[in-house]
Image (cartoon, rainbow, N blue to C red; front, side, top):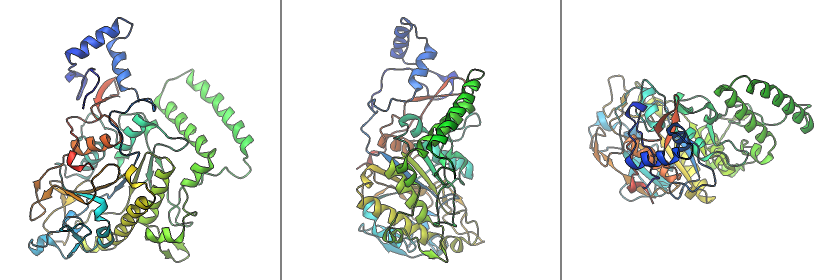
Length: 453
C-alpha cells in the first residue's frame, strides 16, 4: 500500500521519525506559511466524505457481535473430538455446510450457513485480563498506561463520518466494554448508545418521537433558544465537552426530523416470519429479550445507513459450571446469528456488510476442578463474514488440544488492519492524540490477504 510522503510516527512524539521526503514536504509547506505542527494536524484531520479512500471499500458497514467474558472456542467453532475428555468437553462435533469443517453441537443453525462464513481458528494475543483483552480486541493496540486508544467504531466515525441523519456508530445495548468509547479522540466520535425496553417488543430503543404537546414549530423555537445559550458558551471557552454536547444535539435534531431514521430503531414493522428467523419467540405477554432482537435491530440500523454497530450479548466468563452457563445462551446465539447471516444475504446486504463475532479471548483447553474453563488468549476463534471476506473458509488452526496456534496466527494488529482495509481506511494514517501527538490508527499491522474474497 502506498501513502502520500508525509511524516511518520508509530508512537509518542519522542519517537517521531519523519522520512527525508517528509521533511522536504514539510519544508516546502513552510514556504507557504504552514509549520510542522499544522502539517501534522492536516494529516490527522478526518477525510472529506467525497475524497478517495485509501483502498476501494468492500464493506460499507460493520455489525460487530461482541461476546463479553471470553468465548470458548473448543465448545463452538473449533471442537477437538480426538482430545482427552478433560479437554474436549461434553459437546459432540457436528458437520457443517463446508465439507470437512465441524462445529459443536450447540451451533446447529450456524453450521448450515458455514459456507457464508470465515472461521478464524488462530486469533492470538497475550492479555489474560478482561479489560486488557478487550482493549486489544477493540482497538488493535495492546494496552498502554499512558493512552486509551479509540475503538474501531470511533475511528470509523472519525474517518468516514455519518450518512444522512443516522449516527455513524451505535452500540446495542449500553452495557458492555469500556472500550466501546472514543479513547483519545473527541467524545463526539463515541457511540450513540441504545437502551432496553422489554415491556414493549422485547428489545426496543429509546423513544425518538417528540414529547407530548411539542410540535415542529415549538421544537424549532427550543433549538433557537439553545443556539443562543451555546453561542454564549462558545465565546467564553473552547472545550471538548461543549463541542461534544453540541454534536450530540445536532445528531438528535437530525433523528427527530427524519421519520426514516426513527423507523430504523423500531422492530414493530418486522414480520412474524423475520422475527422467527432470528429466534424471537413469545414469552408471556411480551417478547423475551434475546440475541435475535438485538441482531435484528443491528440489521435495521446498517440498512438505514449506520456505519458501525456493536452488539453485546451474553455473559461468557464461565470459571465454574461452564456447560451449565453456556447451554442457556449458545442456542439463542446460534439461531440469532444464523438468522442474521441469512437475512443479510437474502436482502443483498451481506456483500457490503462486514459481520464480526469476537470476544476478548478464549477459554482454557483443560476443564478445571470446578467444571469451568478459565481465560486463554494464546489461541481462540473469531468469525467474519460478508464485506469482502471469503466464504466457506477456515483461516489458521489450533493444535490438537486447542491450546496453541498451529498455523497462520492472526495478531490483533493484522486483524485490525484488515478490518480498516475492507472499509477503505488506511490503517497507517495518523490521528492526533492529546498534546498534538500523532498516533497511527494501527502500528505494524498488515492486511491478512487470506481472509479476503
